[in-house]
Amino acid sequence: MELLKKIIFFFNKKQKKQAIFLLAMTILMALMDMLGVASIMPFIAVLGNPELIQTNSILSVVFKTSMTFGVTTTNDFLFALGIFVFIMLIISLSFKALIVYLQANFSQMCEFSIGKRLIETYLHQPYSWFLSRNSSELSKNILSEVEEIIGAGLNPMMNLITQFLVVITLIVLLILVDLKLTIT
Image (cartoon, rainbow, N blue to C red; front, top):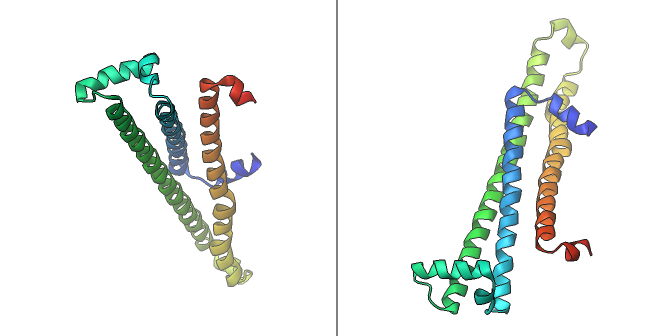
C-alpha cells in the first residue's frame, strides 16, 4: 500500500483522473470477462443435455423468443447459442485487449511526464548547482530511475489490480452458480 501511495504522489491531476478512469474501465473489463465465462456455462449444459431447453425456464423462454428469428429446432438453437457465446467471448477479449493497450499507454505517458518534470526541475536549478553534480548521474536519474519506478512499480501494480478484479468477479460468479461447489 505504501508503494501505491508513493507512485500516486508522482501523478499530476490529469494522471490521477486517467488512473480513476482506467480503474473504472478495468472493473468493466472484469465484469465483461465474467459475462464471457458465464455465457459458456449454459451452452455446455445444453450441449450435454438438450432437454434442458424444454425443462429450464430461462432457456425455454430464450428458445421461444428465438423462434421469432427463425430458430425452430434444437440444433438451430444450439448453433445460435454457440454463435452468441463466440460473439460474447470475442467482445470480452477485444475489450481486454483495449484495456491492456490503455494500461500500457498510461504507464508510458506517466514515464514521459515524470521524466519531463524531472528535467524541468534540473533545468531550473542555478548554474552553481550543476557544478557540484555529475552529468552522467543526472542522465541516469532521468532515464533509468524513472523507467525503474514505472517498470517495477506502476506496471506490476496495474496488473495486480486487474487480475485481482477478474478473480473477484469470477469467484462471485461461481458463488452465484453453486455455493457448495465454490466453497469446496
